[in-house]
Image (cartoon, rainbow, N blue to C red):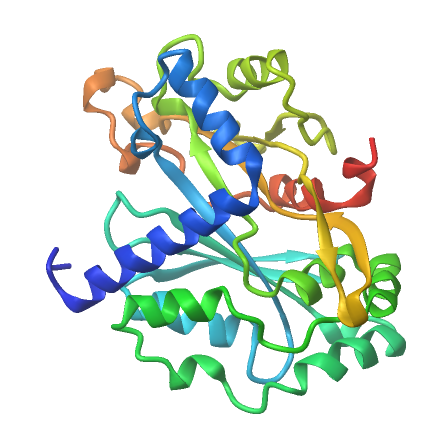
Length: 303
């Protein structure tokens, strides 16, 4: 993709907007970046390779993956593997970037039709306010417009009662009904850091020594069966949320993930200074992601 094309300019604007607002909303982001700088792991935030970013959506008319993906397909992302999360009633796809310096994107969608009638009623009472696909009315080459769209409410602010009812059945549904399309997490690629910090195990130890709380669902390190993808994450920080009628409640916000992608066996003999993203394990692993989702769940945040 031409580096000066409207699509590239827009994508850069969108990514900058996502990350800057995410950093404002999730104190752990800058806290982790600052300790990385103080320890000499990086010199500036831009030195971090962002492995992937993730979004959560609802499978309802005019929304969900079918709508959301139009944004990033326009920018040259390619739709890749499908994942199904039976217990959590989720579907997901990942999207590979047009250039290696952009993050992968992981988009999940709640199978709303698999929920109870009450939960479906609550969700549709909000999402029925969206009467056409909102992405269709966007100028996708205008990065500022897309950035604003990704940070604006798609439906009215939920009531605390509706939020708590959804929370009992689907913590994912409750998170989305309040947070909408806000960025769920970004992911630090640890394999490109200095020796001593360039594995998830070592980076986890580095974080925990500095007081960061890690998601331990399925163990603190989530490892793919092939051993090529290892992941961990912080537990989502709690935020004071304002609901309809001025009610407030502390809820899960977003979190930070860490990924170690090991070199593929066929490239094992490559000198370290020649290893690029294409030489490492790509894609995702449903078993890992299933546990990472729980970074926002009360089973983790209430520990």
